[in-house]
Length: 221
Image (cartoon, rainbow, N blue to C red):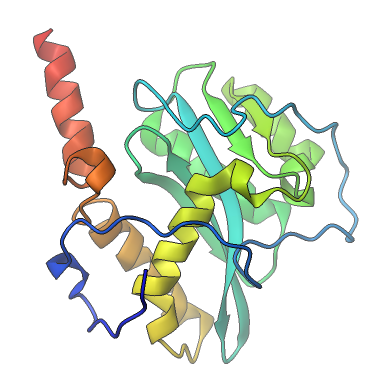
């Protein structure tokens, strides 16, 4: 997707753009592989790049990226539903810690109340391999799945979302503070991306509209 200047809050005037194809870029997704974390064993790659789901809360994808500000980096952890394309949970912090990804997971579980057995796919970053995070997955009844080491394409839906966020918002901003970035990113995700941004994959509907229509169809069946 070609970058172009977009006035703030004018994202909704775009017509069903496709999300960007993941590419390997500095700052696309990041992990601390060198700091100390109590690590659990990694999980198998259950998806094997088969990015399909049959219902909401069947498969979630997750990752971490960062946004540059004049105060330093703001780290963003996000969780995306593979069926609806909704970002079901996110959290931000000034440091790339396990606490940030646990906060994003907690937000997603609180919002969606998934049944046990949901597949939770991440890369093999230290934050996702941390014992504390894996314990949270077990407590929520979620099944871990992990990309092969160093293969960003195994987590393509999240890489695609990061590309979309940065192309449509972040690359057009110079953030003076982390708080400014936090506010605008929260607004983009919660008010625009989930509720208004149309996806060709979803029949030219937003994630919220697609999920609502799916729920109505299930009730009528």
